[in-house]
Length: 74
Image 1: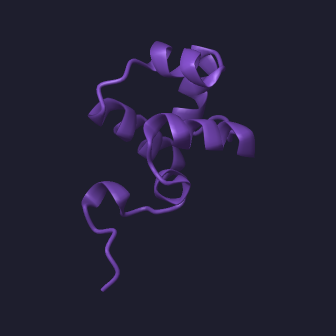
Image 2: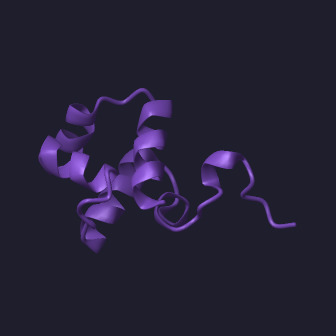
C-alpha cells in the first residue's frame, strides 16, 4: 500500500513528481522508486513526504483504506 498511497495522493493533489521530489530534497527517480515500491524511504523521507502532502504519516504509509474513504472508526 505504501507506493499506491503516495502516488494516488500526489495525483489527487495534482502535484508533478518532479516538483514533489525537488521540494522534499530527493531525486525524481528516487521518488518514482518509492511510489512503485522498489525502494522503502527512510523515516526522515517519510516525514518529509507526509509534511509535503499535508497528510498524516499513518494515512500515507500504513492505512490501507485511506483512499477508499473508509478511514473512520466504526
